[in-house]
Image 1 (cartoon, rainbow, N blue to C red):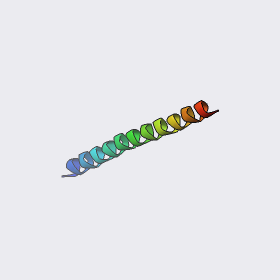
Image 2: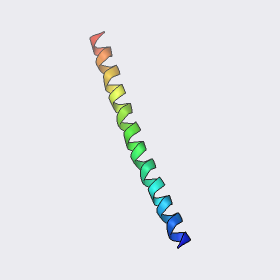
Image 3: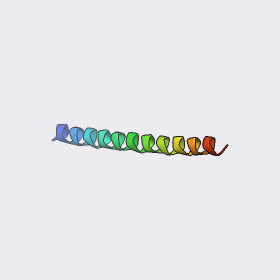
Image 4: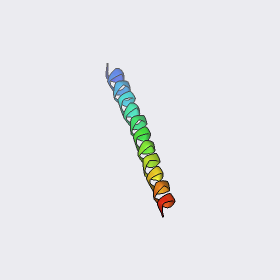
Length: 42
C-alpha cells in the first residue's frame, strides 16, 4: 500500500515537472518572437 502511494506521488510530480517545462519553453518562444519583432521594427 505504502509503495503504491509513493509511486503515485512520484508520477504526479513527474507529470507536473514535464508540464512546467513545456510552459517555460512556450514562454521562452513567445519572448523570443517579441524580441525578433522589435529588432525588425528598429
